[in-house]
Length: 564
Ligand code: ADP
Ligand code: MG
Image: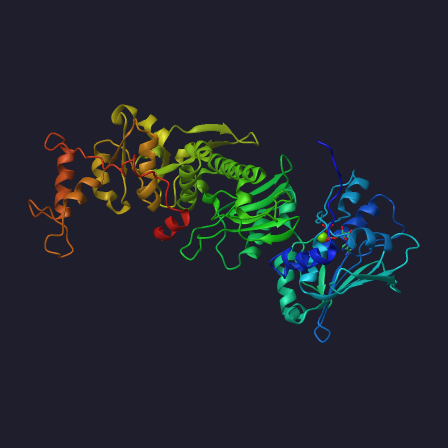
């Protein structure tokens, strides 16, 4: 076939400009985020130029000033960054979707790239709220002429000389009537707090610095104390109980990601139906729902994730299908697993004391995620009737100083606040392999421990407590399915399933003998001591039929709500 013509598609700015203005972002307020990001970038660029020795004189104290004029319906954002020449305005402003970031990174390629922008679209977001936009700017380059650019929202602009004397840029937005809220102090303060709190330059509103600046997730863990992490948590989530533990994430391959995730205590008033993790991109706040990025079972975690590699302008469904996002999700789950393992190994006491809260995450994660299950399998512990303090041998090691001896307590030797020991299923089976064979005795009701459970203890059997909501509804059926070679036997099942409240008096009795529960238990107990009288052999209560009731079905939030 003959090629008739080859060429480039052209775009009519008259037609496309309104679309850019109205549809680039649905959320108008982000225009401020974009202007401030550009100001921060302008300051970073100045630093880059200065580091390379290109700049004569001092760069001064970097700062961004916001000025509001309600009468004129104006908001202006000024920086003392790199500024622009007329040429640069023509190149980077007049051409939509043209960013200077690439040129810069190329020019200073031996320096770390900290620039926020790179699409060349952010600036135009201010037309969502603007009747008119003006740029007044003076470049850092020797002998530059200051310039003034203005545009009233039509694709026509004006560029003229300015008498500006100070290096940097001021963007002045004259607001549309329906957008005049952006000239209000409170509104702007709140927006800066939301989006720009952790940007590394002081942002001043009427001379007062209103952003926090320090983003500890960008710092090295070695330079941070526990108090730094706790203080940051309190800042993000005021009036909340201290977190149980945290994980500092930091990787640059195969994606860039940093952040700090905290395990909170699960309190009844914690809303677990949605995520609480804040998503950032180069210290700029993006959103506080990370549902697509972190695995569902980790949603109750808190803290921040910062990654320039998470695509931000795509739909949610595209996000979940995105390869990088999937890799990030796996990375986070893996790091959480690693952290749990190190806590279990290094500080079993704390692990056990936190287990009530941690266990829910861990078990739910194991149900939901095969890879995570493999990672935490040996970290899932159960409160046990065994007295592990007595029969676990004490290991003695020399302390670091070399002069004193101390106990290196085996993991299972630690107890919770009530003095109970905990064990993994693996250790349990190993310890009891002769007596139990393949049976696992468990109790679902913590309050019955003194009766049913003692009965088993007297018989020399070890009973595990599986008494949480998640145990009862999901985890036990899951274990039964996972370990089909084991026989899970519920010790508190037999009795309460046969006793009934005959006369609705509130007391359950044996319908055949009319004996009360206490009497029946006492009898069983006595006979258990003398094994010859009655053979107490409980029946296992099986969970849902694994064929038609897969175990992992309610969302964690629902599970937790019901747990409260
Ligand atoms: P991006 O930030 O992704 O590069 P923008 O549309 O936000 O795209 O900005 C386009 C370009 O305009 C920037 O790359 C930069 O060169 C220039 N620019 C915008 N704001 C400023 C500013 N405050 N100071 C200096 N240059 C700026
Ligand atoms: Mg930008």
